[in-house]
Image 1 (cartoon, one colour):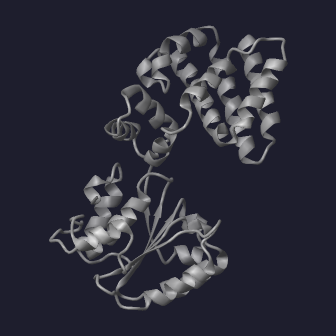
Image 2 (cartoon, helix red, strand yellow):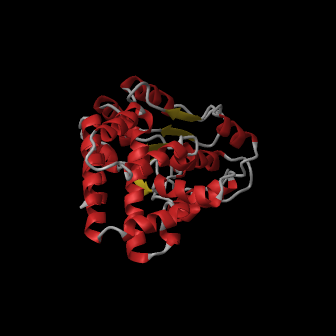
Length: 327
């Protein structure tokens, strides 16, 4: 896979190809942006392009022995550093510092990819700083982090930042369709994934039918009864691995209710196959009620991000949503 196969990052890819073609690539790069938008894939492609044996300007052939070795993770001049446990540790960086001083074994450049660089301990970042202050001429370091602010300012200032943005929804949906996903499902997954192809691919293996059933059950809670609320909260919180996905799906439903109320355009919905049900529900509610429902779910998501009690948060959210509908 070469640069031309990387989706939705035209500006970043154009810049990288130009710097490689003119042999002006910086010694240290930091790829920032959300997870699942091509940062790691691009870092690997940079390594291929810098060591490709084919006659390709600013890209790689993806067929030669060098490209094949890099793709398999066995090229002696391309090194991946990933967190050991919860962080990239100082001993890993010390190993990098020793390796970076050596000449390439068989390629033109040594490339070091530091995945989840934001997890580096402060000691590890300070150790890496020594290498970046006097970088060897035939080595390139690529750090992957969500934001440049996740790194020490002294370290970040010695890296050239390349920003990767979220992928357009239609791009994510199109790739999912190429992988066998139908049109409705692909757009639903792309919407929930927030511009991350990796996230959308992960969601394909999630119990989406069950989650969508819980979403619709949320809006069918009977008034005046507490036990159904407690039961629903219990069932949702019991599935810890899908709790955040349930809340994202619930937020998308609340968003769709507002969109249906205001625009009446099913093409704009996340739940495109549930257009009639959304229209019926939204017709019985005022715009203020719909906005309040959306904010209720959003506040619950934010609260859980600050370590609020999941069960209590869900119970309060379900009661508020039920009362807002009945108002």
